[in-house]
Image (cartoon, rainbow, N blue to C red; front, top):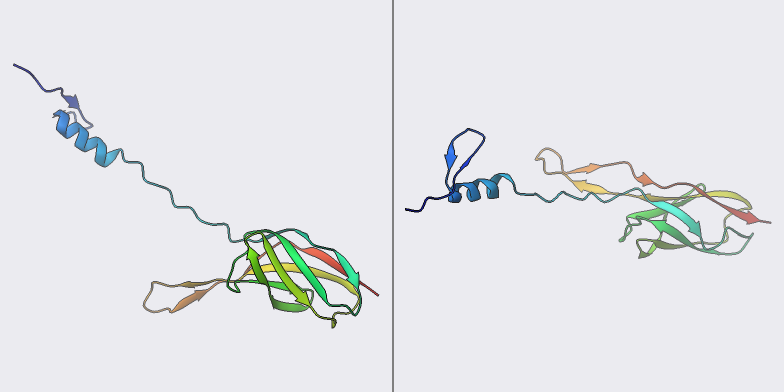
Length: 141
């Protein structure tokens, strides 16, 4: 006579091999963790940090976590929401024409998102834009 191996579970009851396998498959399953992308942009550098007055400025912004399809915009001093051309998640490109006066300008990248709500009472949830660190750019007379 052969006997099936048995084991004792948390309730101190005897389990057959089949029940042990079934119990372990259900309760010991490793579930994947959800990965949440970092939505805060970060500027690590610019293609140049200064230019002369009355010249169009063409700048590449290098960093991390930039978003495509117009979701990343740039603030150039008091000039807000400049549409940046998305090259990849690490590079944006934008132009400021010759209407910027001499001075020091803060450059900030903002990721604007609109989350679709799954609630019947709300159509969407608008959150404040995620802003990057500040890099300064100088226009010289």
